[in-house]
Image (cartoon, rainbow over all chains, first blue to last red; front, side, top):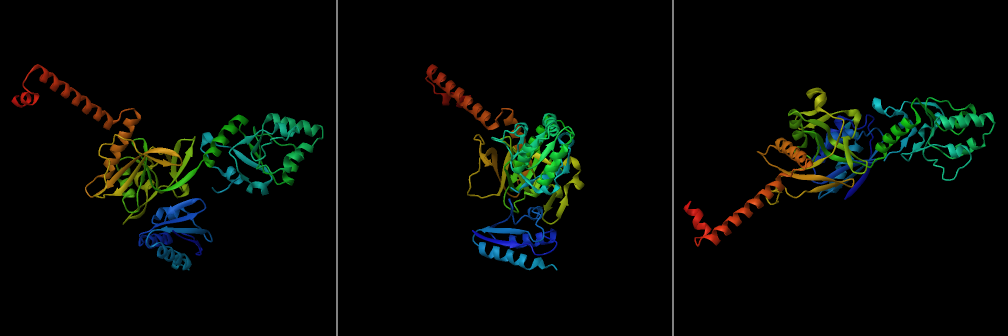
Length: 88
Length: 336
């Protein structure tokens, strides 16, 4: 299992467009990928799940992945957060 | 879980019959204090100076008796116990019946930044409502990736990997007159020890669904309010999975299988998905079958009983003819 803690860096937080980006990226990997914030744990391949997580600016999310390509998956998702979902 | 503050208690949006009717009289900086136990305390003994086993971590309720005692203390100019009461950090004090605290009590609360709330309800009614609300809030919860639907009155939680068709199945069920409770992120609470209540993980966002190729749709607007529900007991878990030719699926259904969620055993079915299988109709049938089971009728078991009885009579007949006639039973039936 690979884990990484990331921070939401774009002002608007995770709304529909970033969520779609996350789901698309997560969908490319075979691993099971989860996002954890506070007590909620949701599947990173489900767009409604990610939106209902309600991740706002500066909130932190723990990405966990389990499977054959877990490291690549976590790295790819962390990159998205790092690049502010190509916003701003 | 996230901490539940006094401000959250004030902001609780309850339905009419559960309304807590709270307002804040003072001690506002203390609204950030968190409530850690779903319980109340009537601080009569503490006010009279007996602080052993004082349940300070609970919400302190002042009814008519306690308020009358505060007035008596004010008349006698005795404030030692009040100071002592506020020296420990109580989450908040609540005056029922719309009663007002005495001036000294209020001043002490303001000084120690303890929130003073007031409700128009009677103490017993307030106690019943607040405990009901807090039990729900403090109930163990878990968020699952799935869809919760109500089919023929049975709350069914559809689970399965992404892309197996949970949302599409739910959409078809809604179209057939059933109800959607939550899509994708289902929050499940265990109340009263063995009841699982499922609802949408985020109530603000309402009943939306994501359908591949369509995007996000608003179920309430498309299908009307009759197509949705806010919460529903989880009575059956159905796991959808892609058909694996090598896997053996339940062909009889006489054994009950269960899945454990938050320590509660819920009946569990595995339904393989394959082109040509109409999943919504299978789910409708599963729901009706579940209702039959709740009424005490188990289709698979009753069927097996009939088979056993039939075999038994066949056997008895065969023996009867064998004893009576040298001609064997097989010959007898073949000549008929």
